[in-house]
Image (cartoon, rainbow, N blue to C red):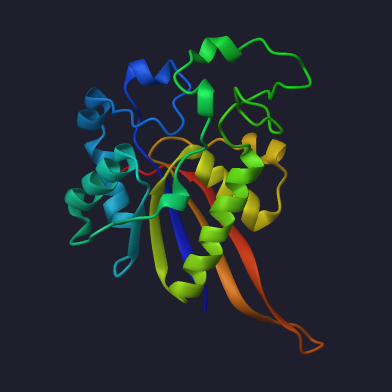
Length: 215
C-alpha cells in the first residue's frame, strides 16, 4: 500500500503577472484562459481519484483552480489550506520584471529559471530551503493519511521541490524540470518496503511528470 500524491499546478496567471517574478504574491488567474480551457478541467475531474484528501496553498490561484476542477464534474470536495505547499518566496525580488533576470553571470544563472539554484533572494528563501519545507510536509501528510490519495493543487516551484525531495535531485536538476499549468504530476510513498535481509523502510516512487489531460 502507498500514499499517493496527485500534484496539480495552478492555472495560468494574468498576462501582467507573467511578466514579473511573482513567487508568493497573490496574483490573479487569466480569465480568458479559464474560459477557454473548460475541457482540461473536465478531464482532470474525470482523471482524479474519488475519496481523496484535497489540499491547496494559501494563494487564491490554487484555490480557484481547485474549485474549478471540482465544479467541472469531480463531485463534492472541500480543499484544506496547506501553508507548506506555497510557492518559493523570492523576497525583495518579487514583483520585479522577469526580463531583469535574463542576463546574469554564469555562476548565478540557471538555464531554465530566473533565480539560480544556490541563490537566496534578499528576504526570501533558496530553492533548497523550499525543498526542505515541502519535504517535511510530504512526510507529515504521508504519516497522517496512510494509504490515501492526496490531491494537492500547488505551484510549479513547489511541485519541483516535491519531486526533488522524493528522488534526491539537486536544486539545479529540479529547476530543469518543466511543470506546465494545469498539468498533473504524481509521486507515491511506500512505507513498508521489505528486503531480503529482513529490513523494512519507506521509499518514494516517482510515477509521472507533467501529464496534460484533455477529453
